[in-house]
Image 1: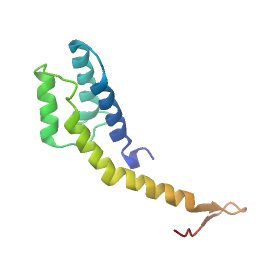
Image 2 (image 1 turned 135 degrees about the horizontal axis):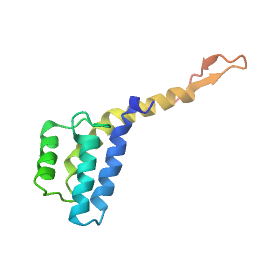
Image 3 (image 1 turned 180 degrees about the vertical axis):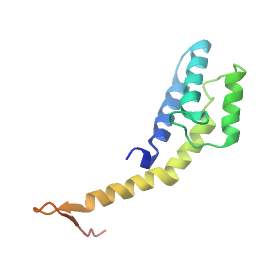
Image 4 (image 1 turned 30 degrees about the vertical axis):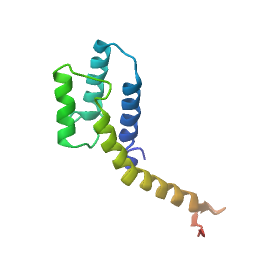
Length: 117
């Protein structure tokens, strides 16, 4: 179910928020940025998110040039927020509404309850 709702987007957003609000020294911030990049941004990353090529390239350039700031992932966060707002959250709400509308008969068979709005 996690894949159905692109849970990696939520994980990235949370990590990027923590990154932005952290008070790390430059060296630790750069190390953390590289970890985030490898997991979420890099093509084939374990939890690769769907962001624009330009945003990926901008992030990679900052990491490669050691010009990492706390705002490094802001554009990616904005893209992911929009994606979640338009896609993942509505699908999740629809699925939960459907799940909440299913009732089980005593004989164990599912029954769809019609809900009025």
